[in-house]
Image 1 (cartoon, rainbow, N blue to C red):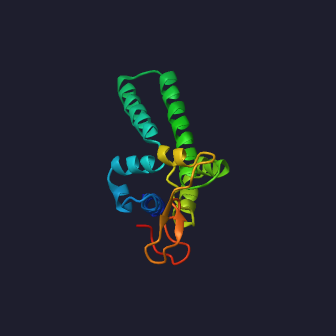
Image 2 (tube, rainbow, N blue to C red):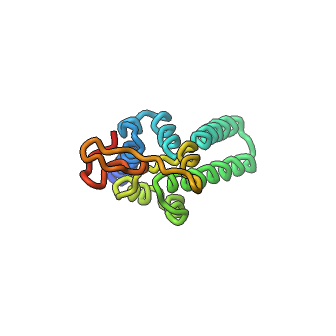
Image 3 (cartoon, rainbow, N blue to C red):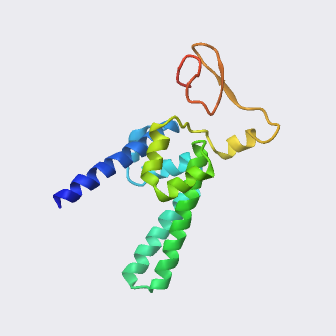
Length: 170
């Protein structure tokens, strides 16, 4: 029992720290990850995947209710496959939201803790992968920018800090 606590507790703390850092890169307070359901919702929202969050919660509730009712293994298997597909698509959304490729998404699928730590503690920045961002970054569209209040340098909205002086985006 004590040995399991020595393994599980650090992994839990590392996961919460990484996800909190991902939230702070997306402009939210990282401590909100500690709030049950709401923290997860914010992480899905940062990746423009709130629909997947709702679907995942619904599948969890249905799975619990069917398990209590003694439903068959086939239905449970279908629910698990649905949840797996949602997590795969969420990993793709997370990789895109932090400016990474589909290959990185494969890493998020198979080794989520390691690759979330790479996103959180590495140089990845949240690129605001939302419907509004996609609309302004279509072929031929102007790139949305912001001006640094210290050095007046123009930066794309995907940058969280100025490359010239290091000032954080207002």
